[in-house]
Image 1 (cartoon, rainbow, N blue to C red):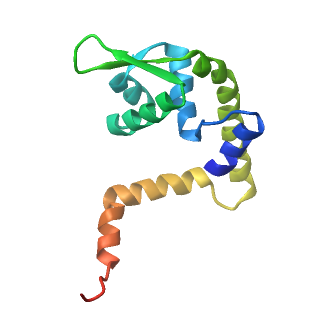
Image 2 (image 1 turned 90 degrees about the vertical axis):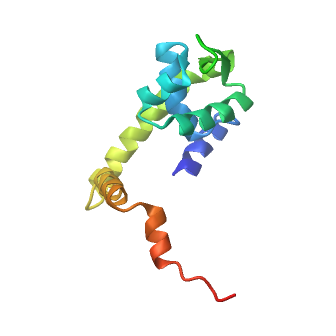
Image 3 (image 1 turned 135 degrees about the horizontal axis):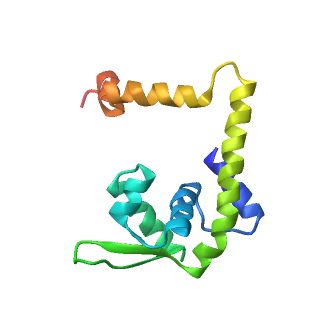
Length: 140
């Protein structure tokens, strides 16, 4: 689905933007500058995941990263390019949520419920453990 969303961006002439950038960009457009930790907390994501996303967004000139109030923090803000894309990304975000709801009505089970069930199952037993359980390495 991410590839299809990215195709929507490309068709609109938006290059270098990944679907995973949308939520952080929208949040920054609404809040103004945040530290990586504040942004991660507000998005419900790990500091590490948001830090990696911010690094990729900086390469695409979507955000800036400046020293924060102490030496350990960085304040993230939108560039002019990031700010100009935020309204479209917010509209796409809403359209994507409406599309998921539409799909939920078309299929006999809700995708959102399946995702929640998968998350609960992986919380009980992480993917790595599951893979290792089934991994049979060839003899040397």
